[in-house]
Image (cartoon, rainbow, N blue to C red; front, side, top):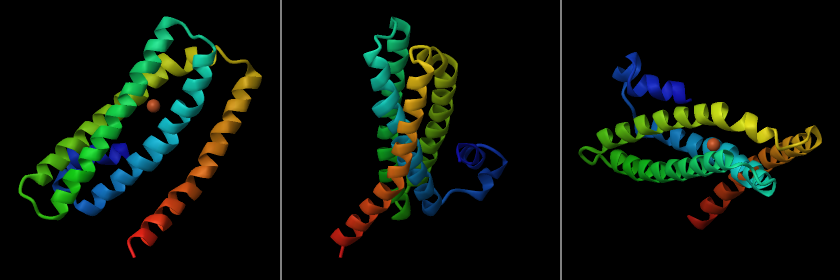
Length: 163
Ligand SMILES: [Fe+2]
């Protein structure tokens, strides 16, 4: 999804342009996959379990950096939702604002994932026994299983509230 986003904002497909429906799909990806699924598993399961182990200063700093980046992504997503509403309403300049925010999302997402892969996961997992690692994987799976139900329960609630 992020590769597609880069192609549409910067690459040869930029001529296709963007539209509010496409941006809605990106917002859904950011809210559901990037935030609830990926960041939710890290913050609610991995980071908490690691904090209990008393990790070294470098890992604590890496964890704080990653969490701050999660907050930034949430803030950018909120701005994107507002800019996209203006874009859909035909507000002048909103399309450029949407494009700038989408470029920001793509750049931040890729550097975030690189940082996690390079500086975080391997040293973090050294604090856990194979058994604990297995238990954490099971927790990850439970987290993901619950998500789909949560997503559509929230949708049903929102629809009901809007009747
Ligand atoms: Fe993350």
